[in-house]
Image (cartoon, rainbow over all chains, first blue to last red; front, side, top):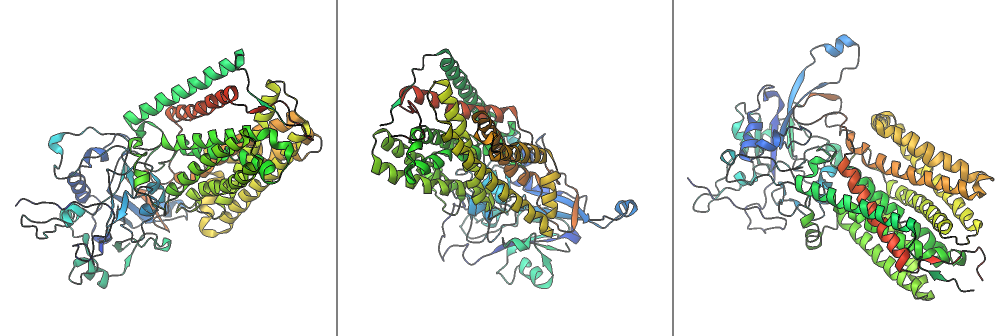
Length: 243
Length: 394
């Protein structure tokens, strides 16, 4: 079935009849279900959003990672033996937190970074002037900059998504294009983000936190969740179970 | 006696060499900027962890240097100290040039320079300091141009009004520059003191620059200059330096006192190359030594010593701008309190590093070249320099 994608226009409130009205998109990540050696979600994101080559930049400090996995453990500061002991390690997926009070959108001088009505934070790549103030303002290191053009093979590209554009900032879009998908008749036909689709362990869930039938709503209801740097007041919408 | 202003001839060997050197810098800077635009900012030392580097350091530094006009315009235009009228034209002209330099530094740092001249005006965001500050900078340039016109046409009443406006507007300019960082989420940025601290450092560096420029220009063109005029500016500079020292002390003492900021404070003061710049470049050479010189009854009245102290302050404030911008970015955000990241295949975790690249140095030199070139042209084609500067103008 051929899909037509709604374009996500920049800024502005579409109004109460908008399909985005009343929604509040969020993500739940179950740290306990995330397998340390698995990177399916990362690869799926890179393929879906044409980030493969940018992520493989030979200088990893310039590489673009819309989603990344880190390994964390409790700080052990006693003696050497304790430091070397197998402390419980956890794999944590890090993405843009799509904050309700996004500092990145607040500081963008051209409103290229904006929060949609459904709470997804996006970047208009055609408007971004590359000042990188959003990267400074983001307290989560979740934003990346396309420092230079990367060589891409056309056959590797997902033709439904744009290529990387040098000189602009960007971050995870929560696969808004998938969430906004419509069928040939124009009826909503949303798909889950690529990372959620790829995860075989059920560690990731994305959905409308206001929708009582959504998986995200149920997870938030049933589990004690944590958010990163909650004290800052950014109101991130990525929640962690078992962190 | 009416103060007379004149142009320099601009035919001397030194003038022509200086013009050539600054013109060369400007050309090299332009080429470097074009090269970075073509190949991407990745060819500089900036990274995803440290997305701002030398260009932003120089931008805030040049804007701070423009504050010299704040001092002179305040002395002459607002407080009516006629003995400083001879320096007003030079001060305002230099302020204009350094504001242009600050804007040039910011412009050449953008990822998409092709969009910068349209998007910020069409899609304005009053919540962003990057939207508010260009209004302040461009407004200040406009005020300085009107100020220059009033000075050149000897309109006393207009001069007083514009000088007062420039005085107040400059406070907003430097406070706004400080707010870019101070109103931010980074641990080493966030500080309500930063706007005020920026004003103090701007006044210190601006006054120091004016002292060096005035003494240098008057000596180079054999113009009479009463020492007491410079001595008074030196005393004023000493107070500015003391205020900067005070702000730095309070800021760092606060970070050390508050438990949650202690680790960041330790990193700032002892954690890297920036710490050397802080202690040696800024505190010792930029503040302590100048204060010792300027507060000493003997050296504080000696023009060569005052010029030395001023030069050290100019250097020290450059170090200060660097340690404001870079360590705030190399210090990592603490995403997991009580935990540590043992492996991150994607991003550099822990303390990041930043190395100034050749391209950035050339771009910074290029902006300096534009300022120097335009300044020399101004000396030749505008009546900027007074024939003399006396402590008791009749």
